[in-house]
Image 1 (cartoon, rainbow, N blue to C red):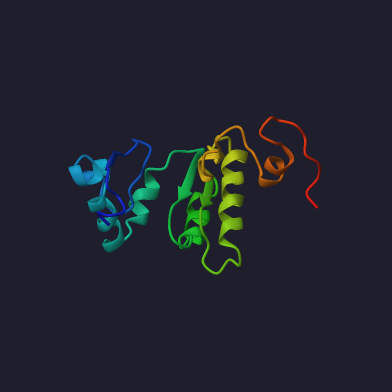
Image 2: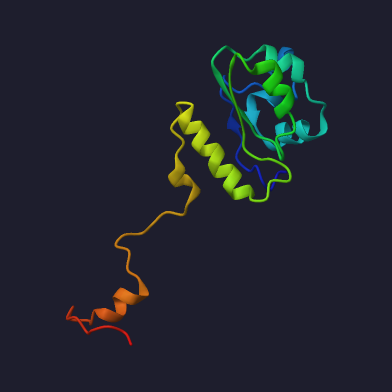
Length: 146
């Protein structure tokens, strides 16, 4: 985990932890998105009932889990309070499609996801192999590649 999370970041006050009891949210373990936090998250039981009580009305809950395991429970206990958007679903035939659909749901729920962060940066000007073949060094058109 230390190789994956090399630079711990402070967690947002909006981040509700389901692996650390609320009484411990001010401890170093719970205050940072760190290797220790995520290891604890993987090894600890889910404190689902406690964490769902902390969700305010009209909230947008983004489930970051390998397969949206808690969808049915969240929908049942959270249906009237806001939006639940899982980012993955076990068994879905196209996980990329599911993730991109979830990004669309985030947008429809009123958020502005930075979709450009899903792609590598583009260096301008963009020159394709085809356009390079059509332009000589002195910028004179050469004609179509045959």
